[in-house]
Every structure is written in C-alpha cells, then in structure tokens.
Length: 410
Figure 1: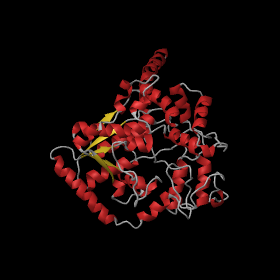
Figure 2: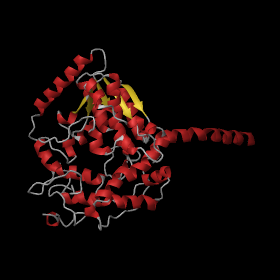
Figure 3: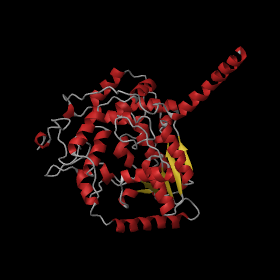
Figure 4: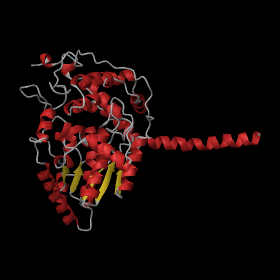
C-alpha cells in the first residue's frame, strides 16, 4: 500500500500520499488508516460531529474562573504576533468574553512591514497592554546559522522563543492561563479531535517545533548567557504558579479562511505575498517564513503550498489534482529570503544545500527534488522592517545635503 495509492499526478511517485488530500507520508507524525486516509482528514471528519455548543460552554467556564481568580490582575496571557490567529484570539478574548489579557510577544526580529503594522493595529484596536522581548540582531543571526545544522531549519530561536517567553512572563507575573489559537487537531496531522495526543505543557513547543532546549544549543559562539532568554522556567516554577494553556480551536469551530476574511474586513488586518505559498496570510508577520517552508521541502519533500492545498482539497475548494498542481508550482521555488539568510550567516549557497542534503529523510535519498528560480521579486522587501526604518533615516542626511547643494547651485 504505497505508490499504487498515488495518482499519476502526485509530485513524487515514490512517496505515499493521502488518498483524499495532498499530505505525504513524510509529514512528521502522520498516520494513514486502512483506507489510506491521513490523520488530518480523519480529524476534519470528527470536527463536523463535535457538539461545539457544549465545548463553548466549557470554554466559558474556564475563562470565567480565570477572571474570578485574577481579581484586579490580568485574566490571562495572550501570546501574540499580530498574525491572523493571534489577531482573532484578541477579538475573541476581549470582545466576546470581556477578558483583560496581557499581550505577550516574542519578536523573532524578522518582522515584515505588514507584520509590524498588523501587530500595532492589534494592540490599538483591542487596547492591549503589551510586553515584548526582542533578541539582539547578532544573536538571532548566530542562532539562525546554528539552527540549520541543529534541527534542519533556520528558525530555532522563534520556535523556542514563542514557547519560552510567554511561560516566563506567566511565572514571573503569576498569570496561570495562556490562551493560544489553532488546535493541533486542526490541520497538523499529528493529532485528531478525538485523540488529542499533544496537550499544552511546559515542553509543548520543544516537542512540536523547537526540538532542542536552550541548554542543547550552547556551543561554538553561543554561551549559556546568550541562550538564557530561551530557557524554560523550571517545573517547580510552573507548578507554583499553576501555569497551563488552552487552544481556542479546541473549544470553538476554527475556520482559517473565514476568520482571516473577517478580521481583514472588520479590523483592517493585512495580507502580503508569502514565499513558497499561494495564500497571503500564513506567517505574514515574518520575512523568513519562506525559508522555514523551503527547508521543510528540502528535508521532507513538501512545503507550505502542500499544507494549503491539503486544507483546500479537504474543504472542497480544490480538486486533488488542482492541489498537486499548486504544490508543483510553489513548493520547489527558491525563496528570495535565502539571499538574506546567507548574508546574515556567512554561509555560501553550496554550504546551505550541503547541510540540507544531510537532513533529507532517508526515504527521500535518491529522490531528485527540483529547485526552481523565482521569476519575480517578492512584493514586500525581504529585510526586517526595523532595519528598513534605520536604513531610511540614516540615508536622510545625505538626501538633505543633496537638496541643499541643489538649491545653492541655483
């Protein structure tokens, strides 16, 4: 039961795909049932039979108890990037349930212009008190280089930071409840609504994405002091505060498309062009999302377009063939962000691809993964927006001098 389950138009004939959508067997944690249907497709079926009204009542009880225990303090922590999910979370918590959350942001220091706007817009329209941690640019660059060899991905500092910083704030400010957005049972493929195998806890993001702890990243030009901001609180600190977390998507019906459309129309949230994808809303806050997805493609044979196509096929928006056509077009595209990554790490392109070749899954060894040249520049500049601002204002004196000289010459 492998290649014979694939249609002739599947991207790789040697890899098994879900018979319903576009999910390949190389997706971590995915399982296929006896009919060849993947975990995510089974979860989407379960979703239609859930009593969401009953689950919403459970959510209301949780949030009411959090408000009662908070007294005059913050009711919960809202980890926020300004992306589509956290923007919608902010609406739900403040406008629907009347909570006063403390918004907490781990900044990857790779904010796009669109992402910077969305985050500030979110803080303004929902009147959120806000804490943000931003690691130094040089530290981010060194971690991005180490991350490639360590986990086969450029983004360890983000995977780790989005988990560690909100929990650090929770323990230090004694705010036990953290409220996240999309459930792992939604599209992740590693859990279903009936079997939520991964619950939120202290090590959630280490298990799901970061892979390595801060201690395990120490070495070379990265000291324990450098990695301190990424260290998780101790189990004792977690227990003392009673820190725990929920995903709204486990309690309310989650619909990416409609929620994104709604926050865009009601609140002015903005999409942007995303490299390696055919939709403009996933990870819109980051200029390096294309690198995360490209390394996944080089390692596992699929990228962001596969995720998006699988969801759209599952929801009846595309045929499976149309989904695979989009996968072929977008997943193999060399992102413009690779140029920025090579610049900040000092790696050559050949060194980058050599590392990724080592990270390639065993079942993909010998499989030729095409890498296609991007035909047009990205619509948004692939440079952290903060650096764009600094660059612009550093250049202003030169512009003024040139204008003054032009006036004098006249």
